Length: 166
Image (tube, rainbow, N blue to C red; front, side, top):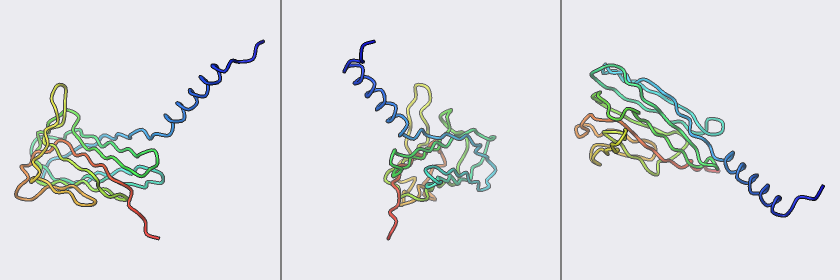
């Protein structure tokens, strides 16, 4: 039997490297939950990252209609230094009237956040809220009372791990 060629070893090395990269990237975790009307404040939270390093919490109150199925997707970067948290209604537009909303992250500081009145569905695109309808702080994105027009279908947050002081 002949010894394997250099091309064989190169192909084997490239395949092993590809498998290592795939294994090192964290797959997002998507969890369904019900958004319930009735004017009462509700919250939904999920942890992600090594040892539950990050938490994303969605707090809201809404009116009208019946429960809607929403989803929260969480993911971390390979080095666990970045978090993404997306909260949305997979069917696109919500028919609930939101009186308030707030999405918060724990263990990280927000680098980017956006709120949408309509989430992409089929051939339609995301429709962002006007900037004056919501505000972003280091750890939360929330409605602006008196300006928010009560339409919400999606929230996106990208955050970086909070630095720990020594």
